[in-house]
Every structure is written in C-alpha cells, then in structure tokens.
Image (cartoon, rainbow, N blue to C red):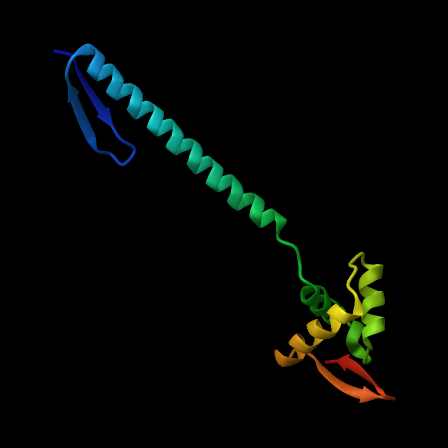
Length: 123
C-alpha cells in the first residue's frame, strides 16, 4: 500500500497511507494549501509594506518641523503659516490650519496670543 510522509511548515510530521489515488489526492491538497498559505502570507506582507510607504506626514508634522527650523522665532499668523507650507509644496487651507494649530497648542508645543486683533502662534 502506498505511503507518503509530509513535514508541515510548523515541523509536524504526517504519514499518509492509502491507495495510490488517495495518497496522490492528499498530497495534491496539502501542496495546494501550502502554496495558497504562502501566497496569502506574501500578500499580507506586501500590503503592510505598501501601507507604510503610503503614510504621509500630517500638517502638524510639517509645522513642528518648521518650528525646529526656526520659522516661529517670531510669532506668525495662519496666513503666514499657510504661505510657508505652500512654498514647501504642502497645500492646506487656513480653515484646516486653525484646527491643527489648536491641537498643537493643547499638546503644549505652541502658544498663541492676540496681536493687533489676530491670533499669532509661536514657541
């Protein structure tokens, strides 16, 4: 009677005994399942890599970087921040930046004060 020994990925050793057709069917099924599992694993890894590549920097990341570069040594208004970001190729409307700046203030990364009737942001 035909016999086959299979070693699984986890290290388990499986011995299959039966007719030639039964053994061939089991081996075929096992190989197909192993290939499908390997393909799924590769797809999952590929998706994780692509997701990591797609991550973009948020507006707050750009603003904090500008602070580190000295942009906020003198207090700046939202229009000035918008303009500086635009020069770097990042387009954010002032309405978005106001919320971003408030979030950074809450994190105590920035402060704000009213100067001549408008809010300005600095260290």
